[in-house]
Amino acid sequence: MVRTRFAPSPTGFLHVGGLRTALYNYLYARKNNGRFILRIEDTDQRRKVPGAVENLLATLDWSGIKPDEGPQIGGDAGPYVQSERLELYRQYVSQLIDNEQAYYCFCPAERLKQLKGWQTARKIPPRYDNHCRNLSANEVKRRLESDEQHIIRMKVPTEGAIEVDDLIRGKITFPVSQIDDQVLLKSDGFPTYHLANVVDDHLMQISHVIRGEEWLPSTPKHVLLYRSFGWDLPKFAHLSLLLNPDKSKLSKRQGDVAAEDYRQKGYLPEALINFLALLGWNPGDDREIFSMDELISEFSLERVSKSGAIFGVEKLNWINGLYIRNLPPAQLLSCARPYLDESLRRHNVKNRNYWNDERLLAMLIAIKDGLSSFSEIPQKTAFFLADTLSYEAPEIQEYLISPTSIPILTTLIRLIDEESIINGDTFVTAIKNVQKEIGIKGKPLWMTVRAALTGASQGPEIHQIAAIFDRETCLARLTAALNYAKSHLG
Ligand code: GLU
Image (cartoon, rainbow, N blue to C red; front, side, top):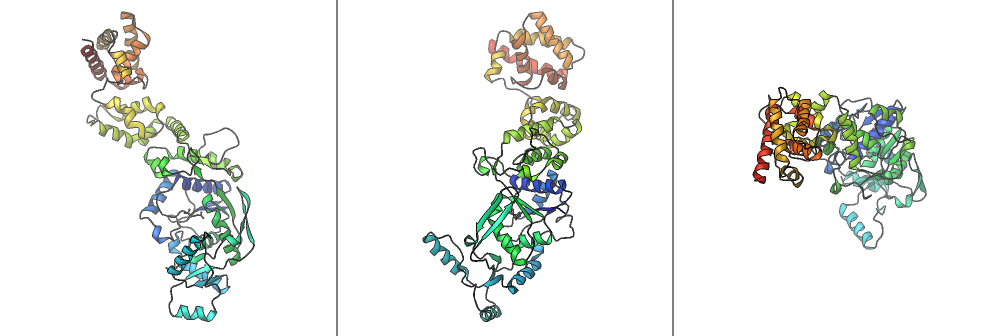
């Protein structure tokens, strides 16, 4: 049975690269009717960040990646948090000591530091010099009995090579001479990543280890550990890094890297997942829009690329915009609610009878074609909610401070006043009647009206805007623009 796992360390936020790793593990498990396991690797106590586990669980949950086994739901192979499994690691490491595959190392930190300094000064790659590897059994016993501080190291063979058969990268050979005697158990009794990761992948019966490329150098160490224990190897697949558009490693300096940032900025989880799925995987044709279920049925590791994938935020914006436009109205309103509330706060809107849900939804529908994320809502709705508009932009002045503006606005105000009902259609008819009455048409006519209603040269269709405002607001805006034009035209 296929069993995959996502094994984050709670050292901060969930990186978008981490979310992609989780996604590929999830897709692969689902596609193969397997199980997807979430395991928290928190054995590095110094790097643990308070709240990181909760944040991780919440972000995964938001993204729609649901583990079959994990800290919140449990499962047969639990506990799924490594700090709750310390006793197990000690048992397994003592098995290695008994088989002489591992040994106690009593070297004080000071000695190791000196060794490293000496090696660095001579440009030798820093590594342990196996000082304690051949201590006599009696000496080890004596030093343990006198409670000397120690760690446990793996006995790495001194020659040969380890071949890793990676599902994405093919065969990779690592000479063991490059691997020094790895620490397995630290002096605080906690396992290292290598030990805990291998023991857990074995006990949790992980069939496929799908993880980031940064773990590739650890893989030969893991292979050695599996051999020392006499366990079967899982299959390995190492995913390429996510890159900035300049091909450097994706970094905070060039944009957001936390999945949480995208959530807060108002990206839809379905869109982020769709986007991440395509960073390194492709369906073999030019389709770009996939629901989670479609991804599950299409995903395969054969179609995961070896080369790094560029995290292009424009593509994410495009996908997100598409998902926003496809939202049914009620969902559009509920997803946009926090951002609408922010808009209303910014403009100090008190009259919620006027700005009721119906009007807010109409406003959203009017702007949604131009939205790439919900966080743009406050800026895109500003002209609807503002008490007064600024007409200072040159492209506005071009139409308002022009000989045509006063006749256009005066005539339109009169026609609107005379109209019994104001809605999108009657407003547009009134504009057309202005053309009939005074003979001004085209851009000067329509842009003047747009400038007066919105203070901008671009935006939703005039009939949409007029349908959202009532007669009073339409008239107030036209009159304000008319007064502006008069004051500037003298
Ligand atoms: N705990 C490691 C991490 O933070 C897991 C690496 C692996 O998947 O083996 O990514």
